[in-house]
Length: 303
Image 1 (cartoon, rainbow, N blue to C red):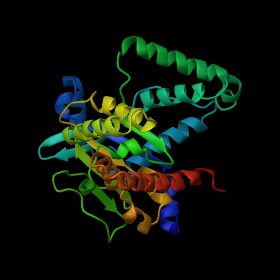
Image 2 (cartoon, rainbow, N blue to C red):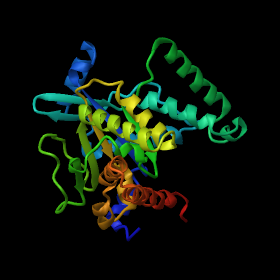
Image 3 (cartoon, helix red, strand yellow):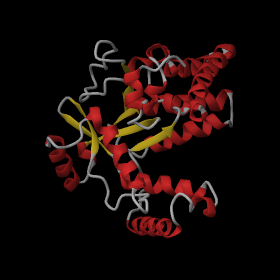
Image 4 (cartoon, rainbow, N blue to C red):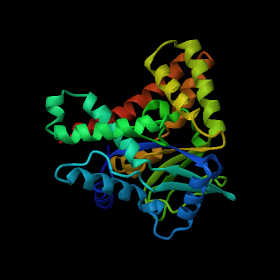
């Protein structure tokens, strides 16, 4: 990793070191009442704009955890969403902060002993949070979230749905790559790395990857991870958009590192090499991705 500029360090104090996999569904995929709500939301001048949405979302989470006692999940579901427009179509990715917090807290509690977890969240608060989630599940049959989060790295399986031509890299005010003309976006942060594709393309690439991995590698961890991404994508409207956002991870990499990050292309080349009998090429490309993201993930434990 190279030098991180002072401005990048300032921004990194605001955003968590996390990447995000998002699905934006067309407005017509929502119930009539929600369509009306999101239409009004898109026209609102008060909603968080894309350039600051991650800061707002993270700020809400930090404030909840700083309460005494802390609040693992908000009392009400978020009324915010990430938005995209393609032609005349509005695409919506709800934040679902409450549901995502419940799911994350359940995972957190299950990853350690109750005695240890009580040091972070008092037992009575944890029990109230769990009871609220149980009541929610009695009335809601789906726990589907439009956003997935990965801290300190991008999982290899997240690169599979995309193509290298769909990359949008912004390094600052005067340099960067332009987004795909077919996919329009609102104002982006000054430093950002995104991939955006159609749901049809994403599902096609995942399906092809699964065929290649099953045929040439078999039952490995990567297969299960790609299968899991594929199942998640199948839960959404077929005309949705899929987005990979490096989020706060861009502040762990300097400009040169981001420019040279071709993880999507390398994963695609690895899969193509497997399918064409070029095993050495496939191994080299896959290892390049693994080593790159291990070095980023290792910063979690840096002093």
